[in-house]
Length: 424
Ligand code: SR1
Ligand code: MG
Image (cartoon, rainbow, N blue to C red; front, side, top):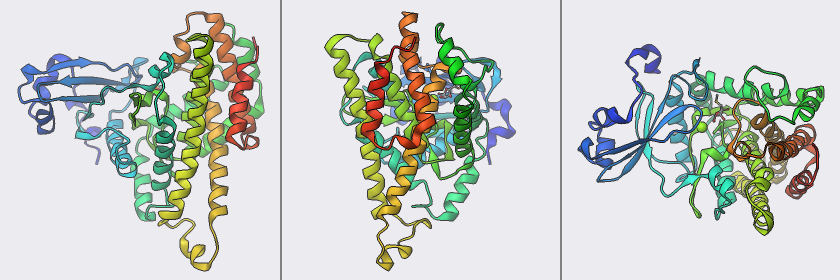
């Protein structure tokens, strides 16, 4: 089924010099870029933790070529990582395109043996994390992201899918084992003990010690890990942070679903909110005065817009597309019973899970292996530690008390309160 598992030796990582010769015979590429590879400009632009990414430009147009490396790029070949993750990424992109048309880049070609995907070049889109650091606003961002999370959550679940199709898909994606293992360790467990690859900013020690000496916090994090690992509610993006979103000032797309797996509906939403909060808490280092306050409040407005769009879209799909075996119309509307309360209860559970996942993501990006540029680009280390401390303690509050923060207004108030705290 997964060819690359049986023939690893035929895989060759691409280089900018060889890419033209290797890909120009593929119609899906040549038709979009041009037939003659001598006219192509190839640039390797991958700056993520795992893969090679090339921009291939020619007289007819431009495409992106993404190729998996057999190891974690961030760490090196001491940490091998299976190439077959590209197979799952391709399947995820196909499903996301069906579930939220236009939300992800179009796939033009997939080569399983070479673990490479040729896809739409998004221009003039930039990685959202960069825009958030640079203080650029994106119109409609929260609505787009809330709808994306709701559509993929709902349409990838047995609220919508035929049970047999969904169970077959769970079986397919359960082959993507090493990638969830990264999340299980780096996101859910490593932040809460002295794991080998962890690092944190000098000055944060007292805050880190406080978190790691709290058994209740660790137990809540492990309960969320249990949900993440064992609950196959829907197909997740699996790594929905601001580096997995590309935007112009008016348009956004979601990229990079190689961490796809079946999991709890609140996971993607929670990861996403965490990345907005980290952008929020880090702003003080990136701008000043009126621009600072204005931009921070804009970030919070995106959080509110995301949650509102998620709830509205999920509720709309509940009313119009409930065709799966869960909460069937036959059990409710056909018998004259409203199912609105059932939908609201489910949304409450998703919200509580999302806040827990959000808190954990806020911890792991400052304590575990893979930190984010929002904080890492802060040169003044004392300031960095002060801002990260606010982020860490708000994260803890969310993990510990997810069920008591019931509204978006409460969540935003919490962020504003933690942002005023002098913790270290
Ligand atoms: C070893 S991979 C580290 C991180 O990079 C990816 O983008 C995921 O967020 C993962 O946790
Ligand atoms: Mg990624």
